[in-house]
Image 1 (cartoon, one colour):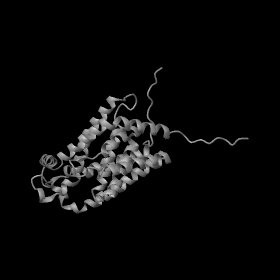
Image 2: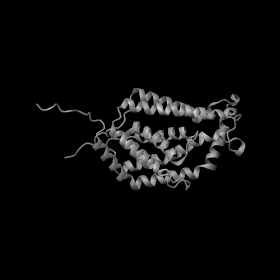
Image 3: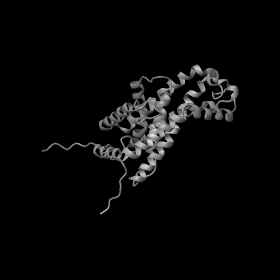
Length: 276
């Protein structure tokens, strides 16, 4: 007798309010990341770089609102809170490993596999909370932290949105997750470059953001900036994510799915009537 694979239970499901809040904060985040290419050359917006921390603080508030709305609407139970805490603590502890060594950051593969098993809602919350905890652990609190939280939330949520949630298992799933982790690692590095590149000033004049330049000119400068500063780091992160996903992925996927089945997040709690 054969059995049909069932859809994986979700610790957090995105409802209307949390989905709307997520769309809002993502839209604000896209503007916050991409404003150098959206502002016209005559806007003189580059002269207001000192206002950036206020934008970051507002983005952080929106992120907290998204997490709060997601948790309150999904009715996050104690078992989901416990799993969120364990995975976030593990990811925060993994991040400093290899810090400063060719982009070796093992936390990324954990985020990919967790988002895949537990879904996009849990993935976004996990990515944001993990990066926040990591910043506190490593002393990396600064105006860049909200953008790191948002980018990691997107990174982990994307793994939960990959196709084949039902039926795709084994080698095919691992290859899919490895490919996603490879390209998403570069995407994470690219968007984080956008968070700091406009404020480089004249320190790197040939590759810095030019407020008076055209969009094609600034795109060329940004591409040169990425190649010169972060390409090696992003490649190391991508390769590390692929290797760990292929080597440790099978065991971790089984462990996460087993824990999710036993937790029975979506099973309603009932109480038996007292015996007569």
